[in-house]
Length: 220
Length: 139
Image 1 (cartoon, rainbow over the protein chains, first blue to last red):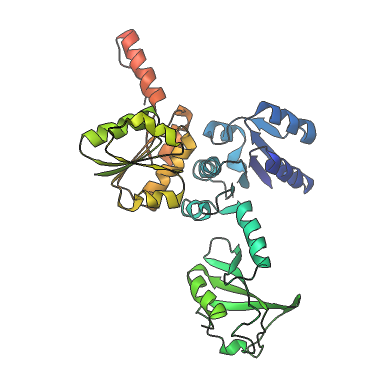
Image 2 (cartoon, each protein chain N blue to C red; image 1 turned 60 degrees about the vertical axis):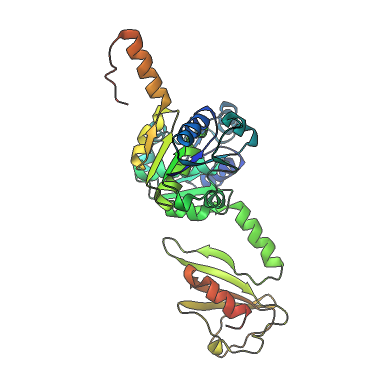
């Protein structure tokens, strides 16, 4: 696989190093001369100096044969434009953007970016997994769909305690995949009964998220 | 007409004043509150401190009812992102963007945006004043 990594900061550097370690062909694009030198000293001849949002530079980088472009600079707007140029001008099959503002996930999706990674959002969901709350934590969105995997943790006094899954009033197009109880995964059937404190991993459409939240926390 | 301008630098401030003087309803956004000093104390439009590429800020600024949107911040990519939010997500009818770097002009066209490059326009004016001829290069 040929991967172009735009942005040679810490994220870009370690990403490039991991990808090279996995045997992939990698090119890092970085505008700061000192960073370019530091990366070249460490990883060898895999770095190009310049602005990754400029089409002429991406052409020099061989973007038309790239399998993936990862834009991991520190600025959301730069990462958006880099991915858009890669996609529109060079037909790169997969573009991945790092974002700092979690609200940009939606904007980037609407503007055609294949995937976004938000460290802010990831840290937030890890914190939320530790704190009892009546919220669903989105774990993953399946590529090119509006289907997501969400996590709900029942409170210690859940109204659903003792309810069988078949009696749960779930919204349409929602499927309970796994129930985690005391750290042990249970692959449930209709007769599986829920307990307070259970963690429930569900596949659903994003549109049904609110209905699903009500089903788990307000008993439907 | 309700117009949102992001970036209250020299161009943004002047544009805002011109639009207000022509009777338009204007909202100017900038990250720095001191940038609004450029508008002068008589300015009759609205101002808001905030990031012009933040959806919540744009909604509070009234993007859903804006008829025109100008992106004139110092950052080309910030302008590109803001213009796309206005045009493709909120369907603002008239969106114009400033870019400094002519290398990015092709990107703008590919993204379906209308852009003005003061770099290109300035060079053309200089060219015609120095030579007495119109430049034959494309804008």
